[in-house]
Length: 134
Image 1: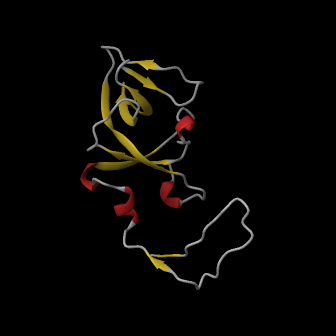
Image 2: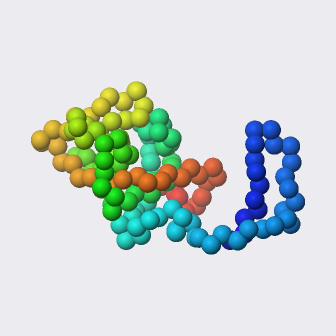
Image 3: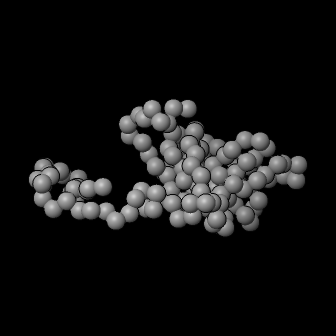
């Protein structure tokens, strides 16, 4: 993959010539974004509950099952049969949203809860793709 090195700032007035010094990346996007390929899956975020941490509806989530979830991590879990993306509150046994419009969810003994993995990356798509049709 060839990359044109462009330093962008708030006051962009022009770009360097595309012919100047192409840089060859030595990594693929898989290598750059996924650390544990055999323990990683990709999902889509829906809803507005995680906007406070920069995850918006339609974003792609890269979820790593190899990483041990810790206090405050963004996680994907199966909660009572529904996949959710939340902040993990281990100490309070709660699932937290990153949006004040959604209250915390207290995990109860009767709840079915399976931690599926830690969100290690999120990707925002600025242009629709036929590959991401829901």
